[in-house]
Length: 226
Image 1 (cartoon, rainbow, N blue to C red):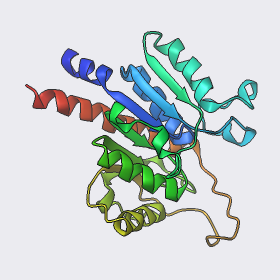
Image 2: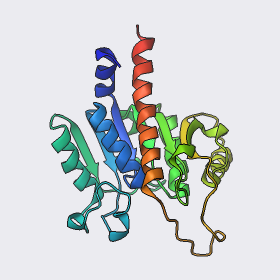
Image 3: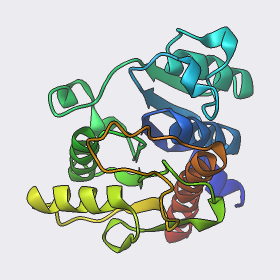
Image 4: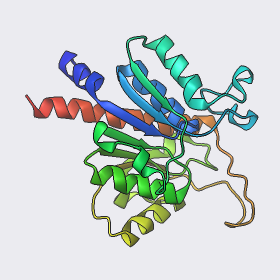
C-alpha cells in the first residue's frame, strides 16, 4: 500500500451498520488493516445461534451487546483506535440519530430490506462512500463471492429487491456491492418461515470482500492526490 495510503486508510471515518456474520468480520479486517476511526451500529445481543459464524459470539459473551464485545476486542488489537459502539437499530424512523456528515465511508451489512434501502440512499445522499453486502444466506461456496456495481449484480434475490427499492425511491446513484453467484440451497418460498441459515466460509468471505473495497478505496484516494 505504501505509507501514504496507510495514512489515508487510518484517517478514514468508517461506519458499519450491522455486525453479524458479515459485518463483524469486515470490521475486524479493517481494524487489523489500519482503520483507526470505526463506528459500529447494531442493536442485537449475542445469542447461541450466532456462534456458528459471528466473531463476537462465544459462550462467554451470550446476552452481551455485539458492539460492546467487538469494541473490547478491537481495542485489544489496536489500543490507539477510536472505536464507537452504538447499540441502536437503523431505520427511516431513527435515521436522524445518525450524523452521516461525520462519516467518510458507510458499510451496509443490514439484513432487513427496508432499513437497508433507506440506509443506502441516506448515506449516498449525504456524500459518503457506500459499500453494501447483499445475501449470504443459503450459500456454501466462498469462491462464488463477487463485487460489482449494485446495478450489475446478478443471481442474488436480495440484490433484485434492493434495486427495485432504489428505483421506487428514484435513486440514481451507484455504489459497490458484495454478492454471491451461487444458487441458494434454501428450499421453500418466501413467507413459509424459512430458516435463513448461513455458513461462516461465505459470510466471512463477504466481510473480507467488503473490507477490501474500503482498503482499495483509500489507496485510490491517495493516488488521485499524487
